[in-house]
Image (cartoon, rainbow, N blue to C red):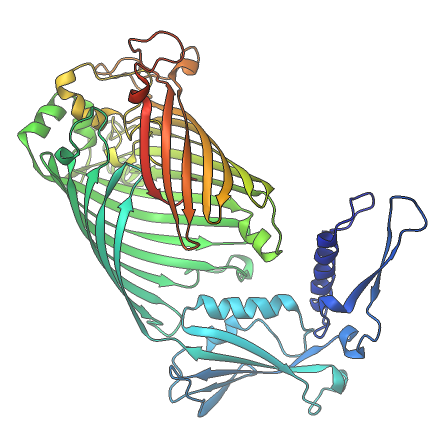
Length: 594
């Protein structure tokens, strides 16, 4: 789109953006030698007071070759060794000369698909960029440099000799293996904090097509920053051990729809994982699973993630008497934590204009939308139905109960840049979870919760909801957070961000939201969502924060101040916090909350 419009305020930035746009436009039409500085402006301020007439003209003394259309001639790719060893062998594949060192480690058809040029076509900036991107996405090479040169010989009669560009792509292999040791201090959305260690090994180019195989083992020890009842944090210390293996293909392993070749990253991932979680004084849980996922981008701003198969199994290996007393008092919580399979499929759509703005080299407001739909147990239930099992009849998979539910979530974010030092960030998120058929209660891991460092920061994690419910049995209040999950979630956040000094930034924020149940729960009152009670059910908090930007990461300290709780307190009125100090929540975290 044009950057200059009649009546707009005069801006040197807009002039440069329009010059870049015209340069890209002409380079995409074969003008290889054209540069933005070859385009000039003539300005006339004498005709009308307060206005300037602009005329776009070629730069004086513009080289003839700059406006000439160039065609692609011979195409070659040179593959240098890991230590920059020069190619010593070659082969010809579909009009592309492939030169390599000792042994060709990549299948020729993979290289051919990555090089977007065709002999005889016009040069385009788009194919230049796409070729570099495709080769980089393979994950095999350290870099991809593209050189152009005029051959002056062996030129087809229909094309002038001085309009041909031979293309040479030069690349260097990256190391075949990569290992990484991570030592970290994690802060999670559930207010768990603690040290962790992980070791990851990756094998590149497993099958000669840019595939990567990774194995990861990890361990962590965590403690709760602050419990809802003010109990000592040590009572819910935990450790987690886990491992995962993944195989990633840099393409979609499905027949091409209509012969379409994706211009942007597309992957197929197969993943296996297992983890053991030990919660001191509570339980030890084992979970393992696997999935197959397709991710592709038809454009820079649109991304689709499809998981046609995902299977997870959760089992409680051990529970304590203390934990048994808690779940015995709440049958719904007990069922949500029972041993069960979760056979699921999901689809996620993401719109994000950040990549487009980066590509256009523009600073503009950021807009992001992500919505996800998950269906669990329905295909399995259908198979049982075809075998004669009733819809509401309890069914097992490999001897264990399997979950059946539908889940829909959405997240909308908009960031308005006032200037380079100030911005206003907003987020609206929500979701709904409906269990049916083989399940009356959804798995605990799928249920919604609210509060914490990345949610309503005036409240600790799982200390609000569902609805106006508040645990009444004080002797069990330190465990009540386990019970404060729901089937519906609605949350909104508003944050004003500003630079204080150097890399230190400040923030003032407002958070609101809650969770609710879809079904009645005799053990929890006020848990259902109603329009009449909705204004009172929304928890509200404000606060201030400090952020230190290290470029690669942001360290954040937020102080939340509660303004309203959905449940009744000893204080009447909308501001119903009993004591000001009761409504303070401090959060140390890494990264922005949204």
